Length: 419
Image 1 (spheres, rainbow, N blue to C red):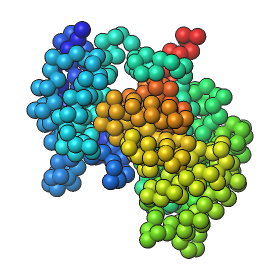
Image 2: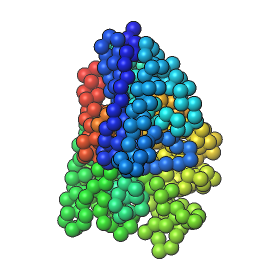
Image 3: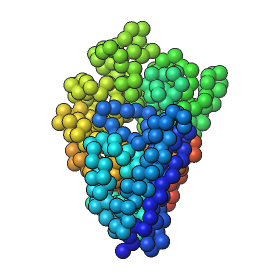
Image 4: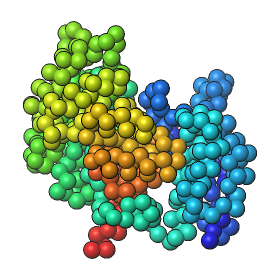
């Protein structure tokens, strides 16, 4: 049985040019595994805390040399000689070393880089692909399949350029397509959207997650544009391709009102509900994420009863991959789908427990990237291995996003060959 011989970390850059941590593990039998950690633009009271240097003279305070040093001076000595396949035991040690509820002492980024490198090394120890190792360890009762992909092809909010209020506009190919076909469809629609923006003389630069950030007047304009592009393609809207939204309502909620360009005056809860009713009716919306402010729990419950049962009401900022918040959402019947951002959980054991809790209560799980990504493809293997309902990895461009899609293509080849 391989044991941990050495753990080293380094500072690298994510897709936004912001430092993040990458950790490598070497075992006494020569197994070597590396994991890097993404970061997002959101933060909340219950969100886990990344360890940053806070040195204004270097990377505007965003460096992670403190995290790198923690791996070398605190974590590595404690884990040397430990069985590489004891994921739960190692994660328990990591949590004890930190000792806080939000991982503020050592940093969620620090712990997750080590925990993910461990699971990768354990898969190598067992001579299995990572997705298969995850499946056999955590979800062997579920069939192995590629989750349905969700593509973010128009960026607004914090991911755009101040152009639109809503943060993400999604296209979701029907799950009757195998993954490689769904990816082809997304690329073709993305290309057609670019051509249409150019034809209109609109801005076609891209946001953090690869979606276009066009200079449109309202959020409804973006939905109408996507609808038109799909209708002019060989594919059928609401049969071959569906539309979805990540509203990120917290970002435009002020003084008890929602300030969006679709309305000449700020909207209250009832006004937003009316807007969503119109959107769902007009576009047969497949998914609606973070539709209202996270603190309005009763509003979430009310909105769920007003939406068609076929529409996914998705919690992201609402739950932040936090089991305490997820239990509250389940108790209040606030959502029927949840975003899973693994780095928010600090350890592999934590994220698996979160996913199992969601599944046990009938929620769809959507494994998601972050706005600040790396080329690490771990989340692609995780999504397949634990039987996620859907993935959300961004637009089908930008290397850090495409790496995940290409990994899913690789896994699909493996699964097809096994049939």
